[in-house]
Picture 1 (tube, rainbow, N blue to C red):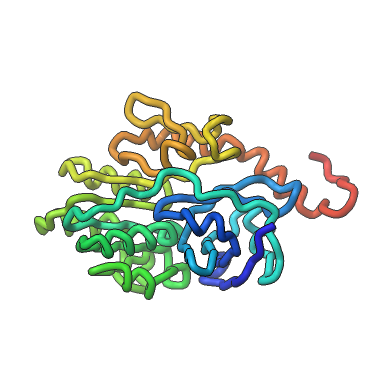
Picture 2 (cartoon, rainbow, N blue to C red; picture 1 turned 90 degrees about the vertical axis):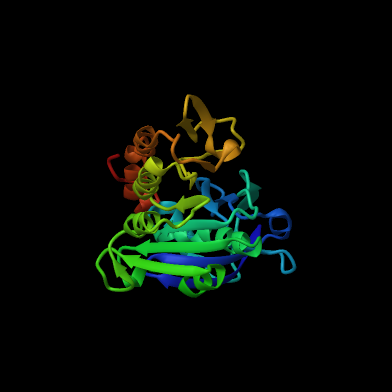
Length: 282
């Protein structure tokens, strides 16, 4: 059992939790993730590690309540427990001194980009971070990203904060100014990561994206998280979650993300049956 130590609402439907998990915290690295279960009969979901504290033995996660499991997770309060909290999983981000690195975070993707930006800055890189959200109220970790970056640029789709527009517009401007960029790392919605990869492709700038497809076991055995990268089939849980953005088959990835829409809808419709006899016709 894994205890919830802290809980904070960052924006509507977006929560940050600090979980007591000393064995996970001992080995956690930027870019890795965990898989958790809220209850014994609940599904397993992957969440990227937002932060870790080895001395306190804690892992921080940030999640948006978008389905049954994340809403159940959002109902937990400090002092309550998770059934499973497995990790760290996946391959950590490669950190070295490269020069100028651009970290692009969109929406909840700002959470996993934060420890990566921090580690890259600590390694001696100039870190330009571009973070975006649909509106000001959905922006997260502004102060943390500011501290982790040499330069922080904020965009909102509706212009309520920072620059109006998309993260790719800022990235394009940096490229056009002749800014020497050793690498771009993008984490966020699939459409955003694809747009970032297409922005850098003509310029041959190395671009890394972090994929979070449907996962079950987190060991590569079930094959649920397979993605096409170049001419190869990869498993995001063991080969990733980070891949060359110019090689990822984003169309195939988005198609696979929709595979369980029917089951997700059924789960939503059954939520009111918990604790009693189900009488719905599904």
